[in-house]
Amino acid sequence: MTVKISHTLEVQALFKEAAGFNNDQGSPRLKQIMLRLITDAAKVIEDLEVTEDEFWIAVDLMNRVGKHTEFGLLLPGLSLEHFIDLLQDAKDAQAGLTGGTPRTIEGPLYVANAPLSKGEARMDDGSEDDVATPLFIEGVVRDPAGRPIAGAVVDLWHANTKGTYSFFDQSQSAFNLRRRIETDTEGRYRARSIIPSGYGLDPDGPAQECLSAIGRHGQRPAHIHVFVCASGYRHLTSQINLAGDAYLWDDFAYATRPGLVGEALINDSGEASRARGLDGRPFAELTFDFQLQVAQSAEDEQRSHRPRMGQ
Ligand SMILES: [Fe+2]
Image 1: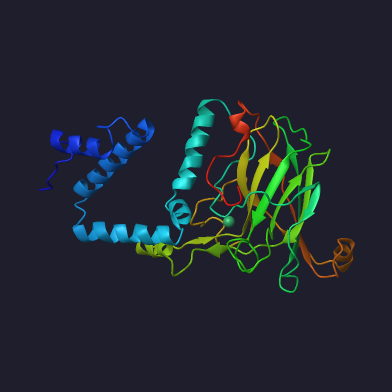
Image 2 (image 1 turned 90 degrees about the horizontal axis):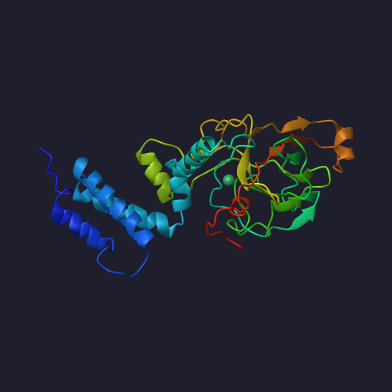
């Protein structure tokens, strides 16, 4: 029979001491969270009869995940970043806040302060001209009534054709495939970029090791990340996931959501290509509009205070 002791007064007193409840230093909020984490971890160990070997293997894995800066990938892979979105959706529904472009996960690869331009921008540095398909993205940012919002900032970032991101892939130029575009008087933004590749976890890294151990892959469909913000409106963190990708609805990070699929339509007209300033080669066009909710507070206009590169 399973032996259980975590409910005893002696062990509960131990956990309270370990969580800092017997001193008046530190953060009361963190003490509360820590006590819950310790207690729940103990229950897992006790209820599932976790062995010492399993415990220390898990500790070793966590050390390696941290060393490789992969917690920002593993936790989305274990659905927790998506869960935070689902929880916020449920809170919004309870408060009657519905509508607009759905939120989805940010992921760990944003870099703040990308070049800012008005109306339009070229996002790629041309280094993949020989292999990439040019992509023209455009759309309108609207308010809940469908009216265009001028002066909104659309902050886009995505991977290159190899599935890697500038800054994290030091072989790319600074801010390659990262731009902030302020919408024009008609609420419109336009970007010239390239079709990104989907990508996966490092196959030799500890996050993939963990997912493989539960029979899961670590692949994402091709996608474009976006923040949209405007004065008086709720900050939006979202993504455009590209239709046709094999992983569109089999995304290891659960970021693809209904309403967040965009179609990059190939145009192989030489005339249209030259009109776009290209040399006649095929290109793709993607139209994606965003709709923001009205901010209920000044805090609503801000993105989360997650630590990020470049800020
Ligand atoms: Fe991404």
